[in-house]
Picture 1 (spheres, rainbow, N blue to C red):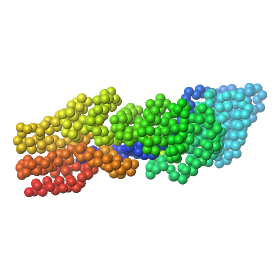
Picture 2 (picture 1 turned 90 degrees about the vertical axis):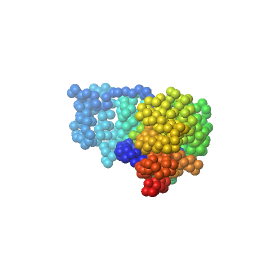
Picture 3 (picture 1 turned 45 degrees about the horizontal axis):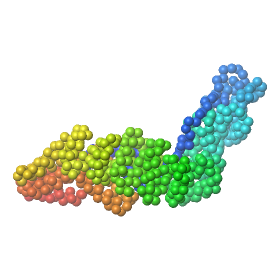
Picture 4 (picture 1 turned 60 degrees about the vertical axis):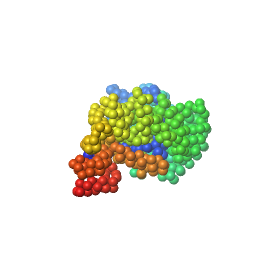
Amino acid sequence: MNSRRVFRLGGVALAGLGLAWACGFDNTLREYLSARFWLPFAKRSWSFAKPHIRRTSAAYAGMTAAAGDKPLDKLRAAYQQIAQVETEAFDEGPLRQALAGAKGDRSLTAREREEVNLIDAKIDMRAGTSEEPERLESAKKKLEAFLRTARTPEFLSEARGWLARVHYLLGEQAAAGKIYLDELNRVGSNLTQETLLNSLQMVYGYDGGPQLLAHLDEYFDTPEHAAFAITLATNPHWYRDAWTPEPPDRAAQAYARIRGLLEKHAELLQSNTGANALALLTMRTALRMGDLPEARKIAETVPADAAVRSEPDFHWMSASAYFLSREYASAEAPLLALFRSPKSSNDQKAAAAYGLCGVYQKTGNVMEQLRYALWLHTAVRKNGMYLSYSGDITDYTLYWNSSGWDLGWLLEAEVPLETLQTFVEQNPGVDDLRVVQYALAVRLTREERYDEAAELYDSIHAIVRGPRTHRLAALYRETKRDDLSDAQRLEARYRMAEFLSANPDRIYFNDNLWHGFQSYAFQGDTDSRLTRAEREAQIERERKLQDDQEELWRAYLMLRDAVRDARKTDLGRRAAALGVSCLRQISSRFGREEDIRRGEVELSAWLRR
């Protein structure tokens, strides 16, 4: 990598660091080799919302327009004043007086009387605090009594919501969460989905915290509650500072407890939906805690016609169990099913595509690996699927390589040149095929097949690279002419080397792939996830790529040979001087420091002589 590339990279790197602070720098490469990639999909409150639930939209108790002079109108007006303030401190005197007046009005209908009683409970709730819970306890009793006797659907729904709020303020997570969860999917609920999802997120956060684990048994009253609790409790964790999972002892304790509860309450999950939940929850728990045999056992014993087999989570966890067990070929089918499933989200399809890249990398199917890496590149670009977290990445549990480095390595070094040509020929209509064609043209130039490369550049309208490569092809042909004298042939080689030295990063370097961050992708000697054979092969590929793509190095090699052949002539002196200039421009990131030093010493000494 030459000095001009380093200079340009400086600006790009600074911009990249700014981006890293804003939305995280994605430097993933071969992420499918990391166990964390195969963790179960994380779930949030919205994961439990059923589609197309019909809801009601009616005014809450006390919030109907109060324009009259009846006791209920006065109560509504008084309540609306405190409902608009953010602080819980308010003058209860006038409000209690209005409440007493409304309760004493014998002309109220049954519905209006229910409204008054609900307002009574809401006043206590607003007056209470977690530091002084007596009023909250009073509100809880009144709301529970109201729910036993009231008949108005919208008031019942509202009362359940306020009761959940009281439970939350009293620190009763399980009681609050179960009400919110039930109301989320209740037909006719008067609470909006957004309100309920925000409430669930407020109560549980990402995984429910220690309180959820401490009260886990309280959720085994319905299949839905159990599934919710176990799913949140097994949300995967990894930590940005060390990139490691949570402490093993804590994970083991949680696993033992969850597994025990699942076994104890297996009968709760025997319905059709319950059986699905039981299979998914048990697989999720086993996989989450690293019990691969258990996860595989569950996956293999689920009947072929079971509805759960069509679930994206089932496909993903089945593939995870196989891949982490190093049965890579067996992971292909569930990943393909996940990728093709109409139930899969864009994120899940992307995870499946990246998982397939891992499967095909391990099984040596580079053609299919390239196909899914290219699909992922297109999906990320079209759908804007870039990392957008800020700060901690703990909650981000769907991974794919938006950096594009995996595709870059495939196109640059891992896919044989003949396979690239075959892919282009067999997939004329695939999205973003130009990326492959451009890479193929770059690879052809490195093989000194300049005419083929130039024609390919022309066909994809590479209006800068095309003419430049035509010029290089003409220079190269001159060096191969049989009718030239030795001196003329040396001059032709010098002109070609001079052209290369004047075009660093513009001939052999693939500027369409790396965008200034290629050196970060040279990880072969430090990537502990690779086997010994894989690491050695990767180190060799990296060294070859560094050599093949560096125009200044290749120009130096031509000039060195020209100096040796031209000897003490004007051409020899020009070649030596240009060779020294090339070596001094090569960035230290290129490596070969000793070779560069020796070359500079040799040419400089020759010039002095």
